[in-house]
Length: 328
View 1 (spheres, rainbow, N blue to C red):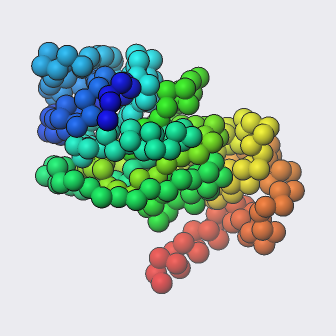
View 2: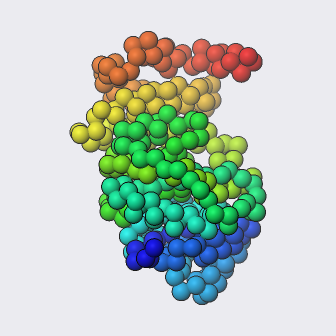
View 3: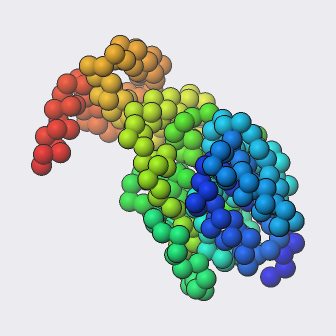
């Protein structure tokens, strides 16, 4: 396979000194060599910044951006702004890749040139010693835009495209004008919702080529994760709904269903707290702006509308039901 196409790999780095060397090693040793490796250090203070600088000195394909600690969304935007590749991939600096990951994804683009993105399965692990060398056999599937979006919104069985950005290789033109928004949580889902509305079709490689390392102190393991995630996701679903392109209105019911269900849990999370009044007012404004669309949407089951609305306005009932369900 000729390596004429440049792949930009954007690595987000923040205080991951124990994990970063493995990530960089598996990128540097990819069997596909025509890479641009952009390391974006988000104000690390544990020595990760030095690892980035030393890696750039040892690999001519690599460069480093150092910035003040702003957030993951900002590292991805900074890397994307600098990237020159025909394809872009975002990698979290505490994860790592199979050594043939990029090669297999590029081959998929060659086999299915109609695809706008390629994504792979991942292995969730706590180990830095997963098998990254054994040659992989795999199957592929082509997903239409409708299938891709549906799988994103019914995500839950851990299959399909996942809401993450890090297991995907995007065509450069697909990302034009789309940037990560400043959400402390759910920014990957927000980014991919907007991207998937542009995709004509995507290639799914049924092979675990990305190793997602679950660190004890990672964002998704923090004890206050949902306390932060609920306001982010409610706002995100609302904004994506009201900004939905006219030619994508057929997907509006998916956003509305997510918005209303997430508001139920958002209100429940802050019920009988100091923030209850402000959270309830916020949800009221979201509901007020979408209530008519929600009730008139023929793709949402009428019984679901009634049940969701009752729970939305009865946090005490929601809490009781959640407790009963947990006890069962």
